[in-house]
Length: 245
Image (tube, rainbow, N blue to C red; front, top):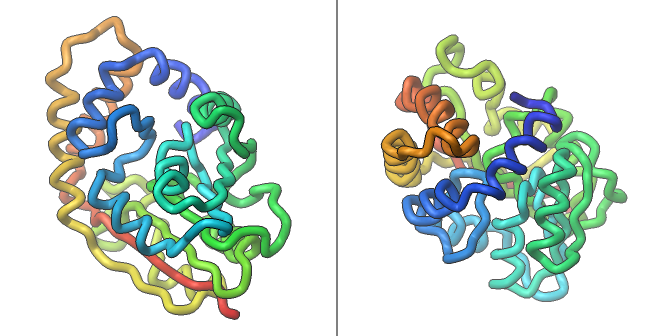
């Protein structure tokens, strides 16, 4: 479930399923037509946009961008230039189509393919846990940032460190410790429990969908059962950090 091939199939199924996209937009409070592949809702998107501090003429990297929805919306709001990187070639192709040929590339959380100091801000929405090495992923973010550039990461951490009922890739995440170790300063990691209310509603409503022949619906329902089983064992977090000048 962490391979590019798995996500290629996932994105292919998702593109053919307006049922799931409509559910996600409605429950998470996202704009009409928004193509989400994560769980950051409308209020979270507003907060992330402000935290990035990008403006016209600046360059934003949306790392693990999926279909590009979050980065494209932030670029629309701010006028920044967007670069999107994802390890799924299918997702990258879908993002290019949605953006009319935007700058989306195949790469990974630990090897973006970008030059050093190439971007002014980096956004990683709900996906840093997929990196084989979280420290390596954070160091890659530092490498591609210009001095003074900002990193914004959203995701989940175990409510109790070492809780073996929580997926091991989530247990491995400790942004308050790992961001300074990677070289970032001005690190702030805050809980966002209010984001979770929308997430829980989305998973619960997904389980009520009746579309057994829709692969995207079936996959969403399977994930909903896994997530809800340990829902209160994880914390929703927003992390911000700066590359030293």
